Length: 141
Image (cartoon, rainbow, N blue to C red):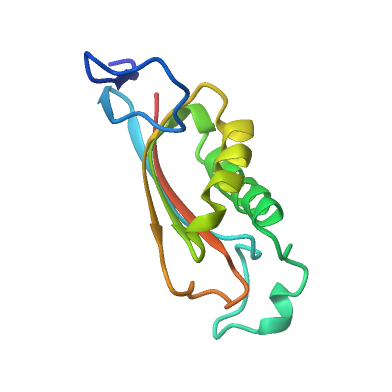
């Protein structure tokens, strides 16, 4: 069965730009689970070596771009694109930066609007300088 992704909106929803869809219905296809990515290199040592993360941008704009680039590489490895993402979780260390993230998000996702959850957390596991982590689920044919 060919994959079909439907963005579902409430019948009385106002006509405005949203970075997500309230609900998504998927029929057909194969599911891809993408691990959480940050602005840090995806492949790094464990236990962590702080110097491996020194090249990360220090602002939300740069970290959002780097994290989404990392997500894109994972999607490409699975034969997927941002348009195939049906759900994404976004973890921020500072919720005041959500609008900056949404601006970058729109550049990568375009018209694709996955269902999303965004939460503020104290810190991320990779490195205390990380401001954002994103994980996602995509569906491909």
